[in-house]
Image 1 (cartoon, helix red, strand yellow):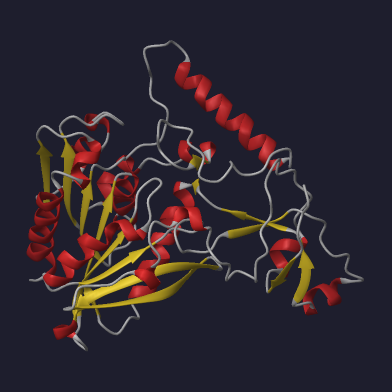
Image 2 (cartoon, helix red, strand yellow):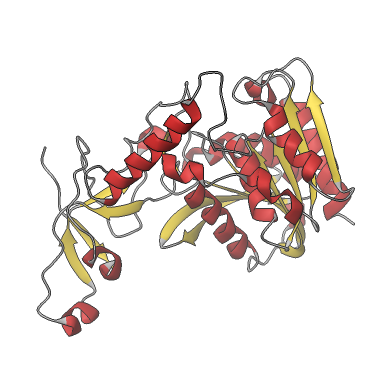
Length: 356
């Protein structure tokens, strides 16, 4: 495999300390600093090709999350130009992209909201973390290293990987970015997440008092292995995750292959040891100043509702919460037959808590 050199700017501190790592059959891409072009296979429809309805103002923006550019999309009614608006921030679930929420965004915008969609790092039209795959420059001394600003190196994009710690940090940074956006009413900000992001919005709201309301639909709230019918299987999963983390820390393996299907038909390979540390359901007691709507599918096939949204709902204190079980549908029914109902429920919830 031929590795290609990349011109990297302003990444010296992180890259100079990196070591040679074996990334198997990965083919490094030619990138320009952190503003890399996204991998095409992760984008159902580019923002540049999207045609918003005539009454909708649509634009894109860049959000910087830990040095990585995130792609964001903003929707609002043209008739609301220049106004401070209640704001809803959304992101996709495991294996999705922001483009999948454009229909929902239009509905929310038509209801009077400014809507901000975004792609996680390494997904959709967002850039990726870069990892050094070749040898770092040999500096003559510490002074030369401090003064250096540009060098050529071999790097690897980290794309199509599911990492809840990175994803939730992206949420925090999009919220920070939104607080300085002229049309955002900073006292009326809500979050909406679906599937894997359904847990993320709960995790973020429990730690950021600026969030006034959330909607979590078919949300996953616990990535830790559970006790299963086969004795010792959960322990085996933990052991395997730690062994994988040890190999990664020692440079024996890299990140999982991008967009790999490891769990059923879900696109995106997980960083397993990070999943072990991610359980938003444990944050329920912190949800004291935020209203939460939980929407579940009666025939959920990816996890057991009683261990996820329903458990978070029952543990959450106060009365500003609601649990809705949509009858007769599986996980993906919320995006098809019941999509109209789901967005109607979300708008009603946000209207109640963001339009006071």
